[in-house]
Image (cartoon, rainbow, N blue to C red; front, side, top):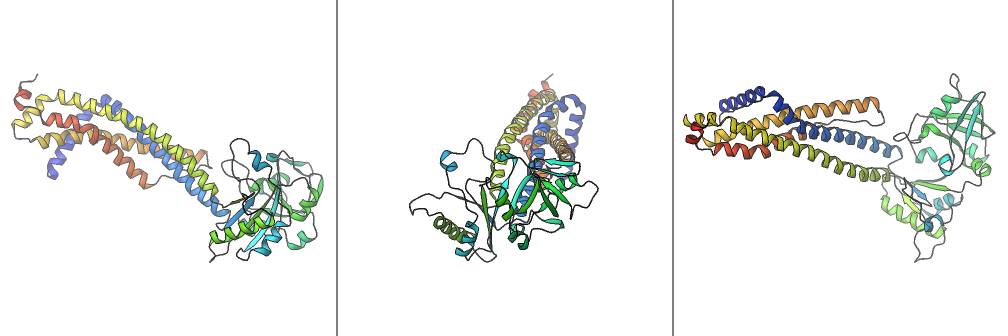
Length: 418
């Protein structure tokens, strides 16, 4: 087919669609719904994937955590076998540091928070903040977890730790609530009724999808935490693997050392968990996998309905234009010309639906990003291209049968048709 013939067939297809505006609009509706759902969900997932990746990097790409129970969100009750595991000891970090030479640093931290059934509050003057997450940490803590970066003042030092000084570093939201118009550094607050000097404020971090973030934290020296809150027994060890050292080898060495520290028999299972920061991305991939399947089902139904509508409308069009087909064949049109004409009409119909679906998907992505900043939807050219290809493929698939039927009509029968 020459370029002129292609252009002529395309103009004929557009004229036909323009002559039946309402019918054509209803036909493309299914295509629009299907492509819109694909584009909008893909944009949201792509944006969230980048967000999760940045979040994982903020935990430290070579930082690992050792815990008594598995870290991360849990659905249902923790099995009794895991709940009966022995708690870690404060000295375990120092012992692990001595036993394993392939790790860069080892630190221990404890947490006292509302999700453990504990309450914390901070007060300065007439200002009071509830539901604070109180954490005891060592000076190496911010080297292990870059997410806790100090933007104002300083972090806990070895001097603070050795003397159990009552100093605290506050999350941005806590500091702003207690000191709305004041510089917090050097001020003395009441933290659970005890006096603490504010020595620093963390960089702003609202948390993941509205969950607790650094903004809700108050961090005090581990030695002071140990003395003030002996009932908070749930400790976590963190260790980092230096560049040039195989993380898997380091994890094996840490596992062996922890088994010896906890005096486990050679045939006993580990009574601890070693978690890497990518547990968050792994969990997210599982969730998005289910979301992709659900979206695929919804979009497939929309595309199927739209495709059936396209086939139906094209069959009606073939019937209405039987005489036209006979005249075209009588003046020399080949079967391929008739087939291409109707295929182009079907593809134009679904292509318009695809373009409208992409525009609506992009609009939804923008609205989600504007009104829900924690969901940074990002529309990529890959999905725009796939949206166009999907819509055109539906046109070819569902338009071929009517186009082939039109191409195989007998010209004599067509000319006698009324």
